[in-house]
Length: 140
Ligand code: CMP
Image (cartoon, rainbow, N blue to C red; front, side, top):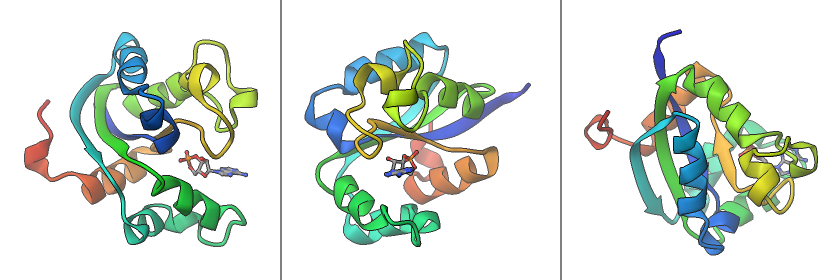
């Protein structure tokens, strides 16, 4: 498996509780490298665009409100099999179902306030990275 990149968000519930460093420690311990990172506040339009695929879902409005409720830390992670590896490191979407040692088991508050997002495929990783970073901002 070649080196690949995935897109990550540390969500407002985690930035609010000052957990950016603790989450980054789990990411780095898993062997993923943080090759781009910035702390930003999303607009309503940015959050709606990012989660556009979920537009018809009943939780869409609440999800957008949550994602603009505070700062997010957007990241590009690089490593062997990075997309699948980061999904393992994050744990299940609902922290109630997440395995011990995963970010969501350790830190998430609920299925909505679940501390982190990670791309679900290499194709979506490319799209999500492109929405949030220029090539010059990514330093491998
Ligand atoms: P994420 O991986 O960022 O992708 C979509 C997000 O929607 C998900 O994590 C959750 O934070 C949020 N969400 C809120 N409610 C639900 C739900 N019922 N099912 C799936 N995702 C949900």
